[in-house]
Image (cartoon, rainbow, N blue to C red):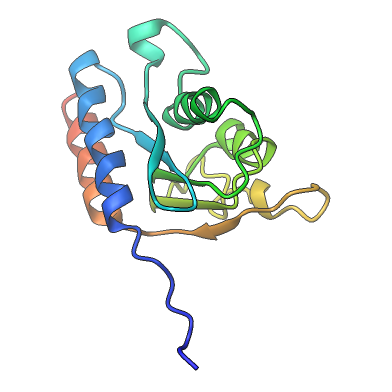
Length: 155
C-alpha cells in the first residue's frame, strides 16, 4: 500500500503570489488568493482591492471565492481549496466556512489578525457545521517578504 502523500501546494501558492504582486500596482496590501478545484485547476482568483475599489470587503479571499462561485455557478465550493498568501482574517475565514471549501491553504501566519489559528480559530470551531482542513506556512517566507517590503515603504 502506498502511504498518503499530501499535495504540494507550491504551484497554487505561486498563482496566489502573482495576484499579491499585482495588488501592489493599485496601492493595495499585497495579498493574493486562488481557488482550485479537485483536479487542481484554478477556478477563481483574487487580490486585495480595498483601495482600488473603495470596498471594505475587498479582501483577496472574498474576491477569489466570488469568482469561483460565479465560474462554477454555485456558492457551495465543495471539492475546492482556497489558497491565500496570508492567514485569513475573521471575515475571510468565515467566508471560507460559508463557501464550504474542503481546504484552506495559506502562506504567512498573521499573529495580529489571523483567524485560522494565530489569534482566533474560526475554521475549526466545533460549533460550526463545516470545518475545512487547514494547511499553513506554504511558501510563508515569500508571502512575508512581500508584506514587509510593502509596509516598509508606508512607514
